Image 1 (cartoon, rainbow, N blue to C red):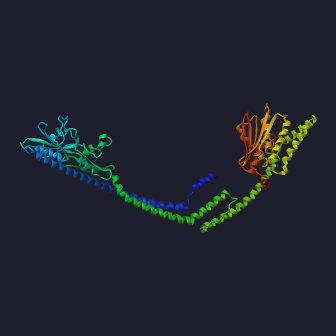
Image 2 (cartoon, helix red, strand yellow):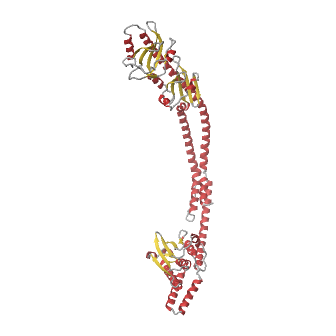
Length: 580
């Protein structure tokens, strides 16, 4: 199991305290859920019944108000009828005075039932139109309705159409009467409809319930949301409601209550919402549920604290100690965990295991250091005998050609090369010595290849005192000559740079050879040493990583027909650190 899988597995684990808390909360939640469901089922039925009763009361209240209103306008019409039946010169003045004094009366008219023509009209201080285009206060429907002289008829609301520059919203209250001379006339009193609207608006069923008035055919007389009705944004099922008898019925989440007014034929419709009627009572239920939840949370919190102190906290401390040991086993110091007898026994066992593992790690580390030293010596011993053979052959050839001076220089360079390679058995040498070793190697190769390439060094002098692995540059230069420049027709160039970058020393060996593909760059660090690669680039990379760590080593950048650049990264190592 890798680290990511262990992290995922750890996240899936649940502590014992969490299990206990979830168990308590789960059982409580199930019990409360069952009880709440049963309560809501009973409460819903009771709430619907209460909503129906509330709607009935509201509609009856509206009916009583409308009944009182019709009685008032009926009383007003009888008063008008009394004045109208007089045969005196003060009748017109009395009638106009009545219209002026009573704010609910807009105008009084009398019509000939036989012809339907306007006979007389009293409008108080309001001016009457000379030639009205239409008369909305009287028509054939009203004439038909008032044939029975004992009944008062109230028309649908309409705009007063007989007055000049004055257009109130009115209903026409009509009755067939007789004059003092015994002639029949239809007496019409236009009453402001705003009073009826105010009465209906004041009747509310809950926060959003309302009442409206319609006639027996389903035509709306008045609606509190009249503008929405006329604009088509709201619709009432008046045609369906007109077929219903008086009483209450539920349709979906709405409660309808219908009651017919006996005097006018109007029907009052009350609409309420079951959900809204439940909301007010839900406040007390919500308070009870919140109280129970708080009690459960308090019990759970106390239980978790007790459980954490007795079991969970020591176990968590032991788990953290194990995590710390996993991250840094060699530097870990274990302190026993106190708790129950089982926890302390587990803690002691873990402490013994830690000591044994650390002793084993020390033994393995010492063996590994010894093994690494053996590997380093083996890597350093892999010097290509062909290089020594070819160099000595070149020296012999120079001596035969009487090129004694060049032969002496080549022998001196070879001697320096081997002296630095031996370096008294040390693995690390100053960078200054490593540069000298590389110069000697390039001098020998330049003699052998008869100056087919040039080379240059750019070395930051501040880097010279630091230490590096010996024989680091030579295998890289060897690879550049044999595999980069040897196949070139033009003159080759090898450029060596050494500089500092933060806490590291950077070595670069760059050539203008034939270059390599990306696949070759990836595989070259895995190549085993052979006759043509000296101790091998792979060996250089292995030595650096064995000695300094995986974050250091070689990186190769190359482009075919352009050249290759090898970048070597090492830490800044002082002489005293090396000696230590």
